[in-house]
Length: 66
Ligand SMILES: [Zn+2]
Image 1 (tube, protein in one colour):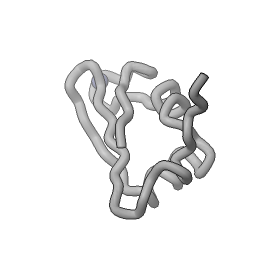
Image 2: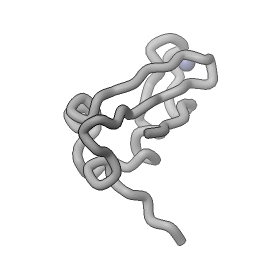
Image 3: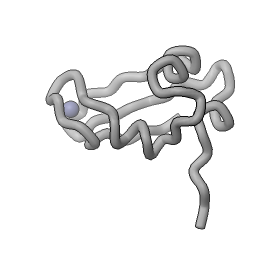
């Protein structure tokens, strides 16, 4: 079973964490913003569970990509 990598391990400085909600709202974060918000040890799975969409206010409906 594959273990999820953490943000700190996966992201390079030029990478952006992209979050897309099922309502089509999208946002993205720089590495520094993502680490400040979610922490170095957060995984994309953690972020997906915790993220609340700023448009539809649903939690856990986003897709997280880097
Ligand atoms: Zn939404």
